[in-house]
Length: 224
Image 1: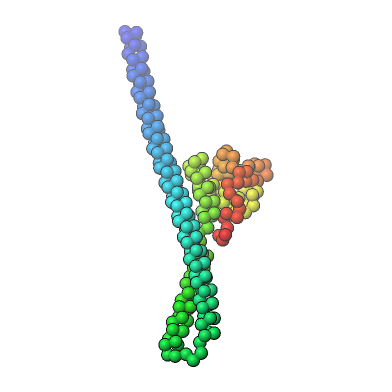
Image 2 (image 1 turned 90 degrees about the vertical axis):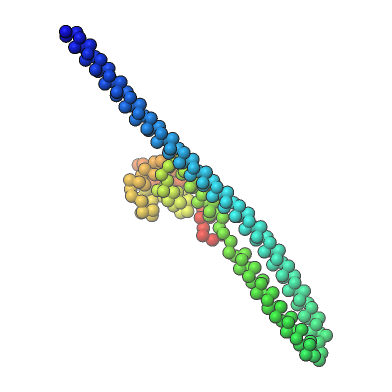
């Protein structure tokens, strides 16, 4: 009788063990599905940023072409203005007693000359209103790195901006004060950036040094 009870107990224990294995497998399956979903989401974000980058590059090419066209038009207008000035000088030498018709023609010439000056100024203003594509490229290079290596990149992004735009070596406290990020988040971000070999962190001195420069400091300037 005792032996039968032991057998039954062993069977019950085996059933419980199987249930535990099933639960563990289900948990692992759910974790795997979540990981796949996260991977797909990150992949979609990467594709989106690549499209945005391509769009910016296309817009840059378009603006450069427009700039060349405006420069050509400006040169043509300057040449036309010079020609009109020459014609005016020649005409002034020939004008004696002006008739009513001659005065009318002269007024039309003066009006045309004023319009040409306005158009020339418009072309010059358009040349000055260019986008700073070096700055856009600089910011995208940081974003691309963080999406590729670190999923939650906001603190890392701001730290890298500080190190690229200001001093290449800063204390952890200076970074915390300049970014407004809490000390714990700053420390975590510094370690993660050090793990991907972008910065070098001296824990004893609390100093962070930029190890891998992604772009020139002048790229962050608001003006070219």
